[in-house]
Length: 363
Image 1 (cartoon, rainbow, N blue to C red):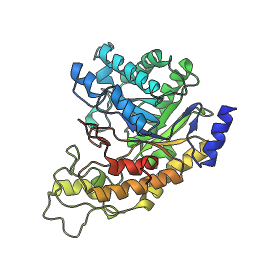
Image 2 (spheres, rainbow, N blue to C red):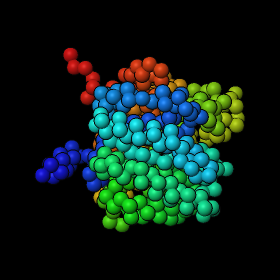
Image 3 (tube, helix red, strand yellow):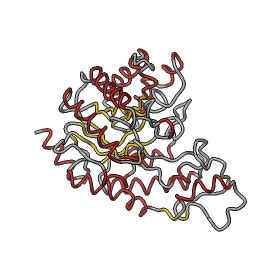
C-alpha cells in the first residue's frame, strides 16, 4: 500500500523518478574525494566527513552521487586498496544514517578517462573489459548488503567512443553480470560520448528491466559553464561570455588567443531555456518510450562568471527539470563547482536557493 501511495504521489507531481524501490529527486556529487584527486591517507580521510553528509541532508537533498576511481580502489596488479574501500563503506554508512540515498559511480578507469583521449584503450583491450566486469563483481560483493531502496550502481561515467556499439556491448555485459548477483538492484545507465542527451537514440537498454534509471549530463553552453577552467582548450581565452543570449560575441575575436577561440567555435551560438528543452528532448523521448525515470547526474557552473548570469542559468535549467520530471545531482558539493565553501562549508545561498527553494525563509 505504501508503494502504491508513493507512486500515486509521484504521478500527481508529474515527476518520473521511480525505478524499483530506489526513488530520488535532488542530489549532489560528493566528488574529488574518492575520485579525481591525488590526496591519500589522513588528508583524504579528513577531506569528507560525516559532517558533510549531515549538512547535505539538512539542506534537503535526498541523495548523493559518489564517484570512485579504479586508481583509488585497485592497484595496477588488481589488489584492493583497503583505505578507499573503508572510506566508501563510511560514506554509505553516513548516508544511510542520515536518510540519504547513494549512487556509487565508477567514474574513471585506467583504460578509460572521459577527459583524456589517449587513455581510452578500453574498447580495444579485452583484458581491460574483463577487469571492468571484475571490478563490479567485487563492488557487488562489498555493497550487496545494502538495501535496494537506498543504494544504486552507476556502471561507468561518461563513456566516450566513436562507435556507440562499443559502449552498448560493454554496458549491457556489465549489467547482465550484476543482474546475476543482484537482480533487483537499481542501475544508472547513461549514453555514449559524455552522457550527452543527444546520443540517447543510439543507447540500447536491457529489454524489460525496470530497475534502471536513464542518465544524461549537461554543461551547456560549455564556454559559459567552463569559462577560464584550466583543463579546457579555451583556458587562455580572456574575452567575455554571456548567458542568456549569444555566449560569445564573435564580431571581432582577433585580439584573443586564437587557439582558445578555435577550441570554442563548436559552441558559439545563442542559448536560453529553449536550448535546454531542445537538448534534452532525445533523452526525454527515450525515457518515455521505455517507461523509465530520467536523471541528470551532472550539471553546474564553474564560479568564474558573474553570479547574476549563473543564477539565470540555474533558474532556466531547473525549470526544464521540473517541467519534465527529471531528477538531478549537482556537480558538485565543495570542489571546483561548489555549493558550499571548501574549507568552511558555508552555503552558497545564491545558488542553493534556486536549487532548493523549499529552504527559502518565509517572512
